Image 1 (cartoon, rainbow, N blue to C red):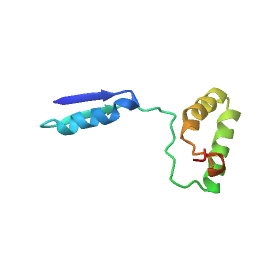
Image 2 (cartoon, one colour):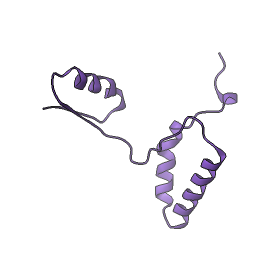
Image 3 (tube, rainbow, N blue to C red):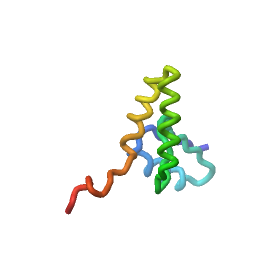
Image 4 (cartoon, rainbow, N blue to C red):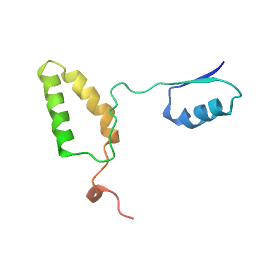
Length: 88
């Protein structure tokens, strides 16, 4: 059986393409960041409040390092408000 392991995001397109082009079954193993959050297209105030509460509980229970790692993993995914986006 054909298999491919994808560890680098830049290899995603070629890895999936290889699996789809293979004649027969294929296994695609994609390594992801366990701290990465799935972000909805629109973030509500309630979601922000819930996340802040969950992170506060994590920190208060001694998980400061865990909270910092989660922030590092996810800040790259937070869209900038339009006022901060470069103007063309």
